[in-house]
Amino acid sequence: MSHYDGGPMARIPASQEEGRARERELKKDYQSSQERKRRMGLFGGKQDTRPVDEGLAKLKGSDENTAIEFWKKRLELTAAVPNEIARTGALTPQLRELSRIEDQEERKRLTRARIIAFAQLSSEQRQVLAAARQKAFTVDPEIANADEKLVNELLPTVDEKVRAVYPSR
Image 1 (cartoon, rainbow, N blue to C red):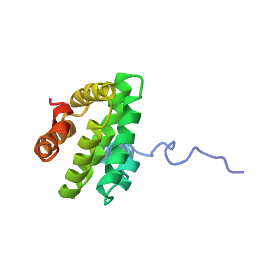
Image 2: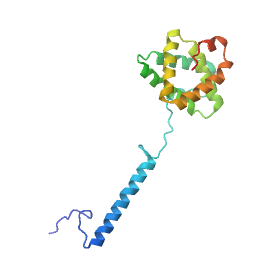
Image 3: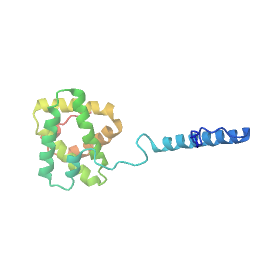
Image 4: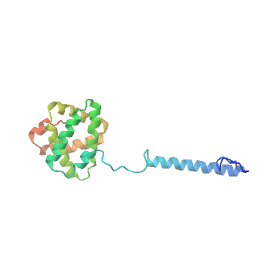
């Protein structure tokens, strides 16, 4: 009758040199696994290409009126969020998704539609959205500054009434 000895990890080597060699091998395996983890990040090496904001991603290539209506509805919903931090959390992914659009002309078109839609909101809605947009500069300054730069470039192309109500930083 044979007895189970616990497998190769539990066996005691016959000599000290075999034991040291095994310890070096285990140490090397551990170090290489730690390096792999460090290179791959928390969720592995795969880069997620899904859109941050599915609705905005579907808006690419639509006509101007559709884009304005989308933004108007989206901004109304964002303004209706009762908490300022949550409003900022709702607005920031929209700015991120805009920043992911590689076609600069499409990005400009959608940002311009957002500016026009913003002007069509009530003054209370514009006020809470302006505050949320201002907080977005602390959440993700790189994205918010890129958006601000694009907005400043596009503001001269819109009607004077729209420019008058759009918040400046």
